[in-house]
Image (cartoon, rainbow, N blue to C red; front, side, top):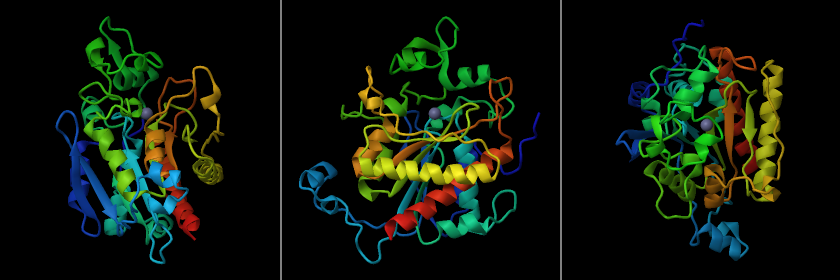
Length: 344
Ligand SMILES: [Zn+2]
């Protein structure tokens, strides 16, 4: 059994404590969860406020992205939007974001280490960080990590159990929504209303506050790149490109994935490059999910990043804590470099 390192921080109180350190950035609580828990946000760098006079649909209808968001100004600063634990138990990204905040505030992370490459990559950008987007789900997980836990634990605590006690599992856990009234144990995928933020009825006009927050940020800030940080059992790390995406956003998502792959391989970390699977052409077609909605709100790429979770008794080998943390630092470094280059 691996000992949990001092830098591993995934509890709601860790989020609050880290946010209390913030002096260089700005902290806010822009929304609360269905269960009334605060959702913290930390920002670095100035907001560009580049919004034009049209929403994205109307602007593109008039063949001008600038009519929605004008990023052509000399002083334009690219924005990176990182979101941890949309699925409340998938806390690998939460720990990485909290350590990034600690690093940017004090020069060292919670292990007392400086990572100059990462700190430099973040310089001069506008960063929007939400360490824990689904605090309701997180509150139902009685431990701080899935490292050393089994696949059975993962399914129970993430996806939950039906009324007869059997595990919901995938894909069954997605075949009822909201799931709340069908389960004896509500998994950490869901907020307290049984909503999986990845799969809301996005055109209903009645989104949960957690989901609305992410879409509002995309609409207002038009982030140059948004990443939802997930855990994907013991799969090799991978970026899932957005579905129903523009060619430009798809190209950029795949380009970032190639760069992250290169960094992973150089560190002997397993990585799986996922191409555009064109699942929109299948029957049934691939889902339009939260990542698609974020992309369609701002026109820029939004992706899901799936991290290895370090399980035991699973089909594939688990990463160590250090490997999970390293992989996230590589991802953060590369996305920051990418948006800077893209802006030139
Ligand atoms: Zn997930």
